[in-house]
Image (tube, rainbow, N blue to C red; front, side, top):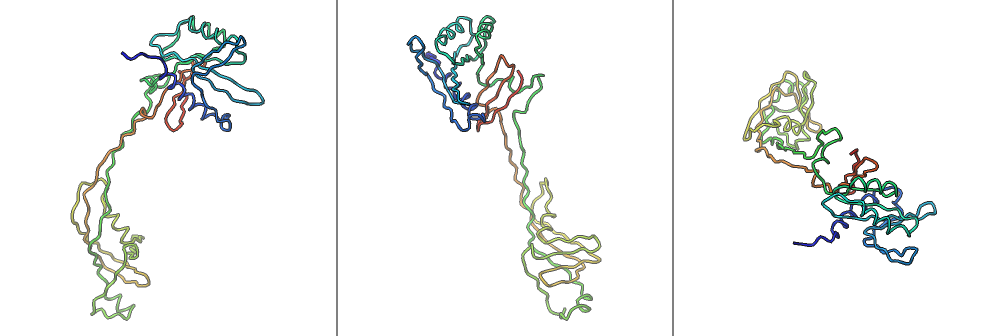
Length: 289
């Protein structure tokens, strides 16, 4: 059986507390670093060691804080608080904090409160962290289903030009084949009666049926009473068009976002009745206990 010397828990507490310090605006310019197993000489010349220590200067004053960490599976008793009081009694201007994973006996809470020692429960997440104070479930996992349809690819497009309009409005010899080549975003159809104008590129998107399982080769024939086709400076009246197009098989995939994997740990502030959840990337969430 591996002996638990508490070092892993001290590092765990230090990481969470460092994330909180890094997130505080007051520490943005002071770059506070938490020290582990800090040794301090008290007023009697006795060396005292504390699990975590940090200090910073603000308004001309130096603020010093220590945290005693106990990786116990039972509630902290009053004698542990007495021991901490004894360690700090001859070190002036030192703010003391106690941290454990489970909780505190009633006598320990009273003694800590009377001696201005903050009591924290610092732990890994549990089911209660995914509920609000009224027991309502909080968002923990998001499942996203992706159904991707590729735009239809127009493989053949044959407009039927109105010959009478050509004879009346142009000098083009309709006995010869008319050719019109260009990119799909350069050729437009204007449907006067429906007050619509769209490119062949837009048409390919309209031919795509979102969410459909159909794929393969398809055709479409559309008639007009009053419509024109445009390409650069060319304009013709058309009666209809015929097109062939292909649709590729849709692609399905899913994404799961598990916020519990982003939650590093939780700090409960017993005197304040609040807790802070520390996520990766420095995200802090605070709520009532």
